[in-house]
Length: 188
Image (cartoon, rainbow, N blue to C red; front, side, top):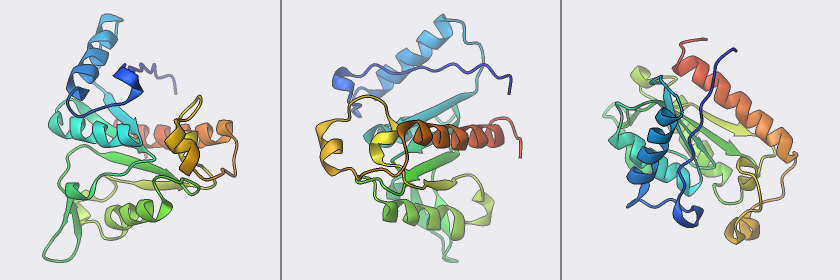
C-alpha cells in the first residue's frame, strides 16, 4: 500500500516477442522508465504466454537486474530445472518466479501448470522453498490475462471462462501483489 508502481511495456513488432530482439526492446523499455523519472531498482519482469517464455530467457541472462518475475498463462520451461540425486526438484534459475495459470486456459493447459506446481511446491529442494510459487485461478482462460481482442490462435483454442475479465484481472492483480510484497519487500 502506498507504493508507486511504474510499468514499462516493450513495443514489439507485430506485438510478438522474439528471442533475437527481446534484449533490445526490454532494455529500451527500462531506459524509458528511467527517462520518465523511475529511480528505483525493484524491477519485476512479467510475461504472458510466449511473452512469458521470452521474459524468462531475458531475466535469466540478466539476473542482477530483476528482483522477481511473473508468468501468466506460461510456466518456467522444463530446461530450467533438474532432479537432484535425492529426487527433489532443483530450479537452475535465479529469479524468483510466480506462475499464474487459469483452470480454463485452452493453450497453457492446467495439467502443465499442475506439473510446475508439483516441481516448485511439492517436490522442491528445501533451499528453494517459496521461490517459485504456482497458482491456478479458478475459471480463468488464457485470453483473460490480457485485454483487447485475442489473436486468432487464442480465440480458436481457448476455453470459455467461468469468470468475467474484470474478475480475472482482479484475481491476477491480487496474486501479483502478494508475491511482490513477499519477494521484493519481504512481507509475509
